[in-house]
Length: 211
Image (cartoon, rainbow, N blue to C red; front, side):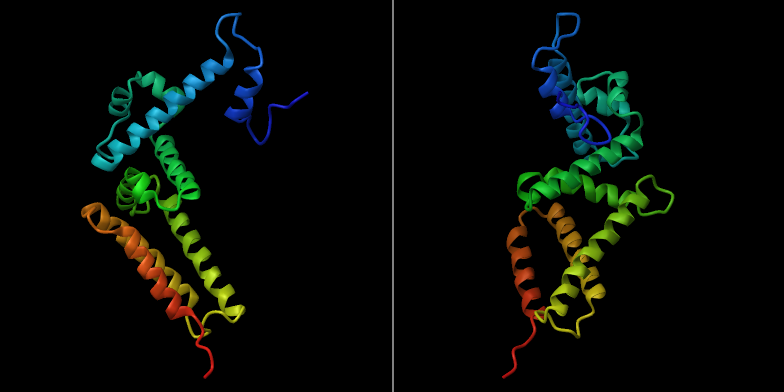
């Protein structure tokens, strides 16, 4: 018998696939249809939230406004997201998932960059709802980049005199700053700018061959 549980909770895809094999609610509507509609509604709410947050910020965006623009009732929205903070975290989850799947999100999903930038600015203060998560995300990113540089130094590919931690901070700051500047002026060829920076960075880090 195939199990529904693949982790802490059943996944949508596994559950839908199993119940689609024949289960129905009172002989009328398949569970799979209900779940698929629910997931579509959830994704629509997320898409609307991303757009409104990027335009108005989280302080000036209400759950009622998101529900109205998404075509659901406030109760329907709360069925998927129990609070504004939970919805904000879901928006960041979507952004992180997009990062994992697509390297050049500025071409494919620019609204995610705008949403993240607005949330970042609005949550700088320690008492803001997403401050701890965004700070941890930033520190994780710096650690990952620093570790890559340190491995290159250990393997003899990168210069040993480079401060890996400081260079990692510089790289993350450059990427974040360029994305923000691009939001202000979308005519900037961001892919070309990143490519040029990466090439210059590689030249800076590479260990000079002995003459």
